Image (cartoon, rainbow, N blue to C red; front, side, top):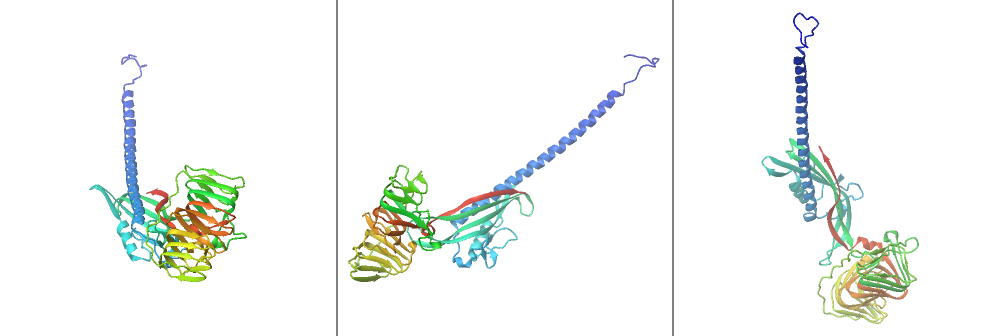
Length: 454
C-alpha cells in the first residue's frame, strides 16, 4: 500500500523486517551453539568409546596371555595337602590362593618362584602401538577349585601326580597410563584343566565288540562301598570304533556306542538302558610305547613264586601255581596260566606284557578290591583270554590284540582290546572309580568370560 505524509490512516511497517532479521539471527545463533555443544559431546563420547574399546583390547590381550602362560609355564602345586581344597576359593595358610600382578595386591601361593614368574609376566605390562598409542594390563588370578589326580603320559605310559584346577582371571586394561588412563576395561574369565580317563567304559572293542550268552554289564561306585544292593548303577557303557553285536540274553545298563562306519546289531534278548550312540569320529587309543624285558623265566607250580618289580622273561604258571607280585611296575615277555594257576598282587601294581598274555586259568586276584590298583598293558597281537572271579578287579589295555572274557564269574573294572568277545554267563561291573585314575591331562581352556568397561 502506498501512502503520503498526509495519509494518517497508513501504518508504518519499516521496522518489522529488521526485527524479523534479528529474531532469525538469534535463533540461528542458538541453534549453532547447540550444534557446537552436540558435536563436542559426540566427539567426547566417541573418544571415550574409542579409549574404552582400546582398553578392552589390552585387557583381552592380558587374559589370552594368561591362558597361554598356564598351559606352557605352570604346573599345579603339590602336595595337595598344602591346600584347603574344601573351601571356596581354595585356601592356603588361611587365605585364598592368589597369583597377583595388580598394584596393591599380594600373591598367596606356596611356591615363591611361581609368584615371581607370574608378577614378571602380568604386573603392569605395557602394550605399545607407537609413541602416542599405548596401554597397560595387570592381572590377578584366584584358585577356585583344586582336585588332585593321577595322570598318564600318553607317549610313555608313565603315571604322574598332578591336579585339575579352576582359576578365575581378572584382567584390568588401561589405555594410556595406570596413573591417568584415558579408558579402562576389565575381563573376568574362568579357565580350567581336566582329564580324560583311559578306562572310561566297561568294554572298548576298538574294531568290534561281540557279546554272547547271558551277559550283564552294569556299574558301581566304589565311594559307596562294594558292588551290590543299592550300589548298582547304570554307567556300564560299552563302545567300539567299529560294530557292536549282541546275541543271547544281554543286558547293558549303560550306553552303547558304535563307530562312524559301524553298525549296532541287537539280538532279540538284548536290553539297553542307556543311549545308542553313533560316533561321528573314532575314539583315539594311544599305542603302548616300546619297552624292554628281561631274560629270566619262571614256572611257579604247586606253590607260590614271589617277584619284586623289574623286568623278566616268560612266566608259565603251572598247576596249582601262584605268581605273587609285590607292589610296583613289571615288564614281562609273556605270562601264561594253567587251568589252576593264578596271578595275585598285594598292592598297587602295573604290568607290561610284550608278546603273549593268557589269564584264563584262575585269572587274577586283587584283594585290594580296586581295579585301578592292578593295570595290565598288553602290547602283543596274540589273543588274550581272562577269567573272572570274586577278586578279578583289573584294568586291561590291549589295543593290538583280540580280548576274550570267558567264564561264569564276575569281572570288576574296565577292558580295552582290538576286538572284544564275551562268552558264557559273565557279569561285568564297571568301576566308576576308573573315571578318576589313568587320566590323559587336558590343557587349560576358557570356560566363561565377561567384560566391564569404565
